[in-house]
Length: 62
Image (cartoon, rainbow, N blue to C red; front, side):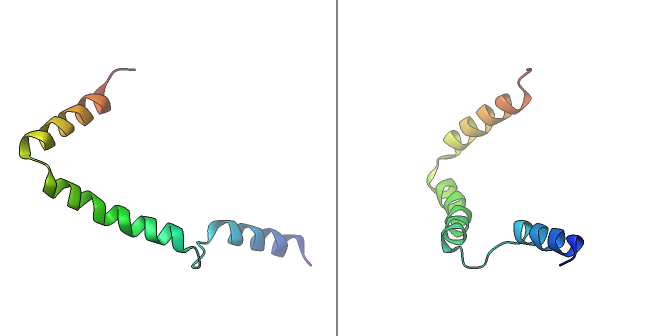
C-alpha cells in the first residue's frame, strides 16, 4: 500500500465523527435543551447576576 494512501486513511479516521457514539449524541442533545430550560427557571435578577459575573471574568486583566 502506498504511504500517501495510508496517511490519508489515518487522518480520515481521526477526523471523521463516528455515527455510533450514542453517548456523545445524547449529551449534545441534552446540553442544547438544558440551557434554555435553565434560563426559563431563573429570575431576571439572577440572570443579570450571572451575566455580570461572566462579563467580569471575560474582561479580567491577566
